Amino acid sequence: MNDALRVALRDTGHTIESLAERVGVDPKTVSRWLLEDRIPHARHRLTAADALQKNVSDIWPDISRRRALVWFRPWQEIEREATTLRSYQPLVVPGLLQTEAYARAVLSGGGLIPRSEVERVVAHRMSRQLILQREEPPRLTVVLDEAVLRRPVGGPAVMREQLLALAESAGQPHIRVYVVPSTVGEYAGINGPFVLATAEDHRIAGYLDNQLQGQVVSEHDEIAAILAVWENVRGETLSRWQSVDLIREVAESWSATKPG
Image (cartoon, rainbow, N blue to C red; front, side, top):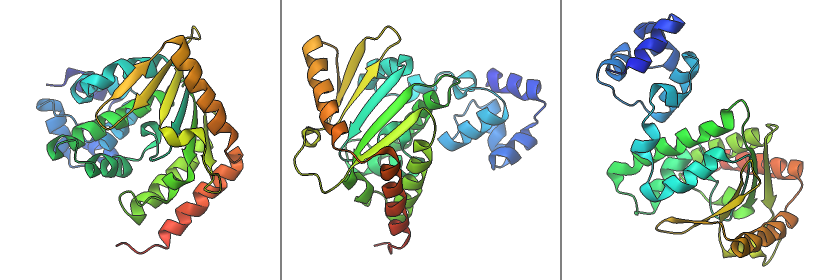
């Protein structure tokens, strides 16, 4: 039995039926969460936790342990403790800002993750995003290549949803999204994605991604090199609001695109 869920129901006055109605599922589904300790779908966990005035980790405390890829755990700990995050992505929307459908399409497309594991990894990715909903969230600055906006990941409907969500996120006070326009030729970012995390004590760690796993770096020379690349890519971007306008414009172009 999920005792944390049972206590949260009691403390908020919710019943199985009222929580099911709030989340948009059958009461039998909520009963299974409660009695069989099932882990709900990512979007259902978020809605249920909000209704019960709890963090997802309070009700499903082992979700990260179950879902996280082992090699990713060191970076996830750094990400959780960061006060600022700077992310550059030339190929996809960064995981912290992905919609569920977009994440599923990204993770399903490469063939590196077994089909049976895709939903687990998607759930983990969605749970990571909760750091941006904390009372004192990290400041997140994202730089994307314009190609990210125009690559049909998951199809037109998925792309439109993702870009509208991206534009909405960019309007939050702790999130900035910038786009390097396609008119820019060669620049340092075309050599690959990276993330920089700054801790409360001002230490900086970097994360470099590849096809098989990510690499965490912290040596002074390595960080200095990545910071130099960050300055380069940040200098090639449109302004904040020009970037948001472009994201919205491309989102609407996807609504006019016929599937297939």
